Image 1: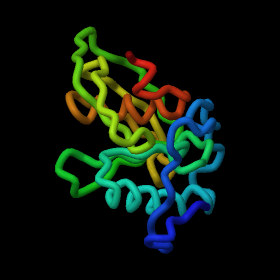
Image 2: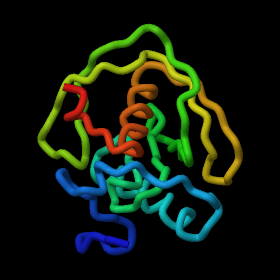
Image 3: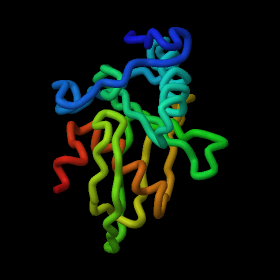
Image 4: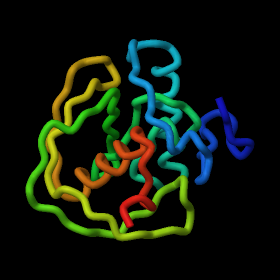
Length: 156
């Protein structure tokens, strides 16, 4: 695991563009309760928060796994998405600017669905479903793009 020298206990190094892992399709997680996955989750949450992010995908820390975390809008809790899949989306889209921890100092307009429904496994390995709208829907779509090797640069 790539741990930052700044805080070796809790912070992972964030992979920066053009690292090839950011362009790969992440591998499905067979066992969400595996030690590697369960160890990564709190480290990813802490890394995201320490870097003032609202989401972080496993490829951004050098792991080809279908896993990402997203802070709830109040920042008090975090969603954990394992093997996520969007199953429904609204017709309505909107264009807003987004940044990315893997592409520092770049803010770009990206069109996203206003409302989505996503199915996933949570951190306990339980099947879950979430209907998200607005900022949360945008964050989930951004992180899901990372699992498919898509970056905000590709939306231009």
